[in-house]
Image (cartoon, rainbow, N blue to C red; front, side):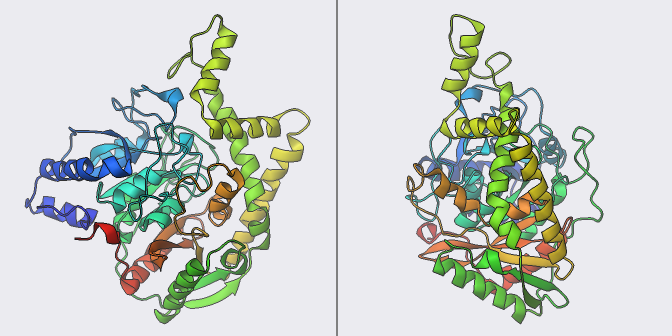
Length: 469
């Protein structure tokens, strides 16, 4: 019997290579696990009963376009939409033989921090189904944690890979902006969106990143990696310098249990041989949130203008064209996309563009330079990924600002286009705590090295206590 709860992608690949199991048998084992546990958790919006390929299965966040498989972005306005082409990341996965398990749940158009904004119902946290899995990629993170996929792809705009990985207790990477193609991805904010891996271990995460990274002629923002992706092997951190940003480790709202677990993990870095020192990111901490919530909604209002009921997706019945546009967008979009479209359109409007969107872009440059200065002294930065552990379902749905603050610590590095890795570093109140490792541009290999060494030293058990037999 295949124990999908503890099987890593690396182990699964080795079993297939040695012909101890077939790809079809492995796929069937995950389908069986999905049938048993997903009715409670609702990680998937679509499950692929049949799949081609001689590799191991993978789950994909439902903002990633898949030929012949529904892609809804968690929205009613794309209900029934089936792409006629694959996103570049899917093409690359298929070229390596990976089999698509299904499409995972997401906040609508990746807008949210709890996966409660999905038009198809919320996903629940495998550690405690009364709590959220984080967002927007809660479906992917929860699926990996619950053994419903060996690994998955998510997308990250302001923390949508890192934050759900923290709340679900697995490894998630937001790559350097431009290292992974956005072609075929349902757009939210084009200067921020990045696809990245979610996995059970750092080695799995690094390998999956190596499969999808690299320049794509279909996406002019992509670049060639300056050096190959390295699978981490060492268990010490000698020679590395890790900075601890004061403002991101002492921010208001960080729970005491989160602070304690992160502090222990940072101290373990010191014990493993790293040089650890304090640094400061005052402007990033103070202006990251307001900067992000001008830039991201502005770009969203532009990107979401294409959903008009004419070309694809939902179309409302109406007496004339103008009424059809209005009713389609009113009935098709949920509250959160509407909120961000309104804010973004206002920020881009005549007379306000320079004062809001233009000014936010200038602040973004300052945030990038502040991070660059920190990396003149340090190889990586460390802080909590999420200020809190997983919160109860419904606790923040009526309080948008409280929900936005879930991404307080992940947003600054996203604005700077930098890579960030979440690794689980302990428990608080019986729920996972995430450590965020931030690297300089193209610094993924350093993050993998630190994450792998900590993973070995901390010995975190990624299987939720309630699912252990």
